[in-house]
Length: 134
Image (cartoon, rainbow, N blue to C red; front, side):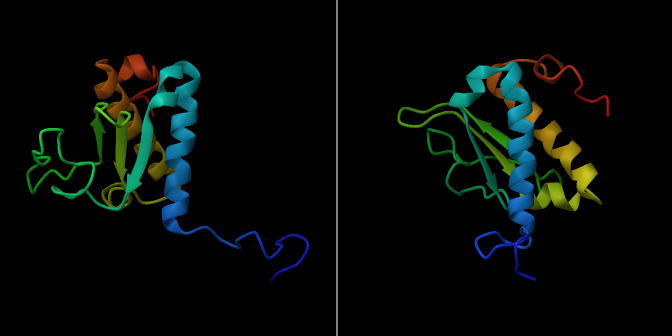
């Protein structure tokens, strides 16, 4: 119902994709406090990984490789000539592996931490000391 609590310009509910994006942004904000260089990294959410989609091919044009048994949850791409470093988080594979919002938030944060660690060449525990403890 529209009214003072929900004016017309405010959506009554957020889509699953918007809610997922917010989980990724929350995780990034937590990490940026400790790692200010992440402000230069572009964080993207895509529904599923595609071996030939934009952003999943290496700079030399090679497609990302994974087995049919292990679908990736995210990917880190180093900076290219004309683009910043990117971290992709794949929404559907994460959603399928979680039962509720709390589990999803935890897994999203783990994926973001793992991809940041890969990008920075560090262990995930160095990026977030609480990694793996929840």
